[in-house]
Length: 527
Image (cartoon, rainbow, N blue to C red):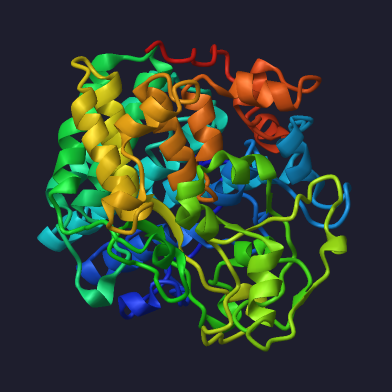
């Protein structure tokens, strides 16, 4: 028997409480065989599954992260940094010149299958108890997330639910249907055992709402790839209604959702937890060091970083003028970072000539910043703040609106109501007089919004700007070829709906894994 040839064993990780969720030490002398004998040990194993999201730049390329990748691969942003040959793997994925020798492709695959391996160990363990059923349910959610991530990056991928396979076993790409069925099975199995809420000392742990929201989102992707299958859109509706009726609530202060010290806020359904005090364990958000403002000096609140993710003016100009709060939260200008603080007596200097002139258009992203107000223990670059907000309550409104527009019984009135509620909170700050309704948008901008689905696409791009969903939205809705083919006409081809499985993995599989899947991309929706 053998373990997965591209997954290697990492010792289980220890935590004494959820504050130590990311501050882990190896359990020395312990292996997976015979480890699961009580609730404490299974909890430690669960923390090891969560800890998969840790990115050590010495092992996994920091851009193997859906947030910057989903922006840079799309029309929202480019790689930035200083020169055209810096961080070539990211630049090649940005402009669709990548090969199957690519650090980002390697990193996504390694991180997700490592998480699947750790989840499999816990899910398949014989020890059982009422509490361990909760831990196994959380592991099932995480395994479902890892497969969801793999599916939207690589397309149909290898399905691995065991930890040992025969020596002559060959891993192949399973069908998209089979991977979706596994995601569905894991989440339906998990939901009954998950808690509705965790206590304040366990913020960030998976609960029922997170599982329902992920399953609904997975259904929507599934429906898109299955020729706009209306019945699958319908399956997401009751799940999303359950989330809307839970303990989350919309904020009337959209900017606050991404401000310093606002992790795990009232709209947070699923966040990757980061630690600013892990010392040498490198458990902060290293992505923030790469993606913050390059060569910014003297700012009262923000540290200088490397500028390896720069939004484009196309995104800035996409926002309606009334949408200044969402735009100003996601996108920072020279005035935001220099002129305004200097008018208050500071001496901020920002050397914007240090950016790659082919990418730089005067903007920085504002949702993942290296804030100064956190206490950092350890090397700053490895302990920077900023949980990745992967599923927010605001997105639930848009997912449900989409299902009402694309399901069996189109309900435009309900879709408009959901989008209007979101817009009043996040665009109008709670005041409906400060933002147009969906009906007003369609009436006043008929060429831009000829139907309600176009309003939905507007809302998704603006609401989720700089959160990593843009590329995946373009692909699953069949719009990537039109949008990205226009920007990169000489480089675009249908294979670029996916990223390639790296040469390392296809070689290790003996050729049974193919670089790209053999499936057609989704067609644009008919509305």
